[in-house]
Length: 195
Image (tube, rainbow, N blue to C red):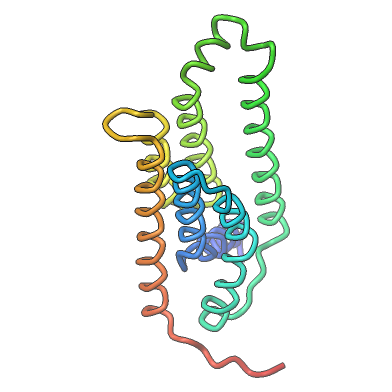
């Protein structure tokens, strides 16, 4: 097996990790929760979003994907990519908020960014999601980047920002649900031997 075949196999394994729509559901529900938090001032949705990230995807993967695909492990390189991606995204977010609330924002650039923070946040979110989608061959993230960037960039134009976040999160959740249903129909359960 040559190097090109191995890279193609690795790419297909990584792509198949997102084929079930479970991460789509988690992303959609997180942004939906964020919109609900802002709209109704309910801090409980922060906990809901955190719980979704930590528990929903792995539980659904175990209950839905494992009986259909069997168990496969992401390569060590892919695990490092996920970890590095999480770290970079977290650092980028912290740097952005530090910049907004620090003395650096006294400059004209800082004031402009602070006055238009939602627009810059939308651009950053969109860029990060496009980069992640490309990096992980998770192409639906391109659509989600657009859906999430719109509420930030348009801010309070036409309708309130939280309502736009609820709509964007709802659309992503519906797409994730449709992908999950298609996955379940396309891949029947496989009876795996007991170990």
